[in-house]
Length: 231
Figure (tube, rainbow, N blue to C red):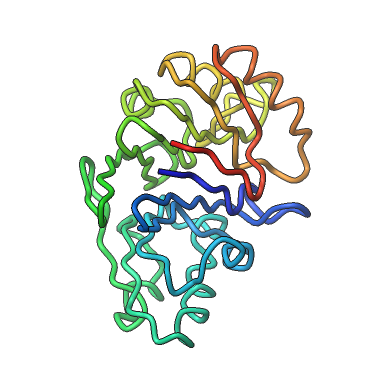
């Protein structure tokens, strides 16, 4: 199994990255975790749009879902089948009313199977937002403030893909993790690697890295477009 960071910018695309989008591949199956603004372009560096098998959408903010519409336009010219999307009950109407483009399933707590991948979903603290865990290999926090649901979902995962939307001095941040929060979560989970994402263009990312690394108790790196991690 392999994780590829397609986009890791938070809130809006940055000069070096599109918004949140993470490709998980196993046995030829390709699952996207989110597809935020601008991500359908760089996605084509790693795969044909027609070869996306499914998407788990964490929540209905444009920096996490906006390029689903652009991806469909890219798939349409290849006559690809409707794209399965698992996401929140408040998914944008465009996704739920165009069955020739998308087949949508409302996320629920617990296990969900898509192709060879069984994921566990947990609702976290950012409106209706769903964090995703894939086996013991990977846990993606999506957007959330620190909460019991994240502590439980991340326990024992090897790679923690966690947002770092600010510094502890900026917080506590409603609906978001600080870098310190991400580091503390990694330490509690026993993760072997912490990857910081949702990196806002106007912030000093090295400061975020330093704050998280001090607490994480494991190697800590910044997500960047094109980063690949074997899971």
